[in-house]
Length: 134
Image (cartoon, rainbow, N blue to C red):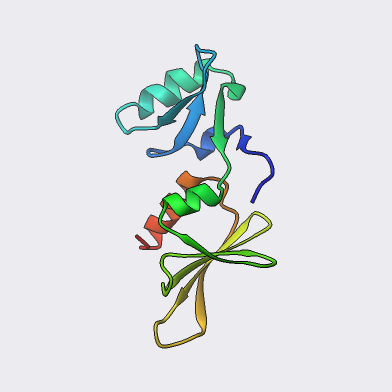
């Protein structure tokens, strides 16, 4: 996983359901989730008036994976997480790259469903939904 804990997101990264922190008009970082009811206001006014450094997002980490129900099952040259001890879905994490592999219950060969960079928990949640993985 990434050595830095936070990064400044680009406007293109924001979507309904995106989790971020902001200290806009405050000295304290507040956690936020972009809701559909505030999306127009956010993009047209709030973000437009703010400075980019007033927003930050936590890089995806072990805590996020465990919060999404994945269990760490191995650590070698890469980290391995699965949805349960005998689960079909497995995440492999290597140098900020993630692969999502589906293992059929009666077959030891996996089927790669995704390989790429996932920067934060919101992106991973969105991808898991798109892949039909709950």
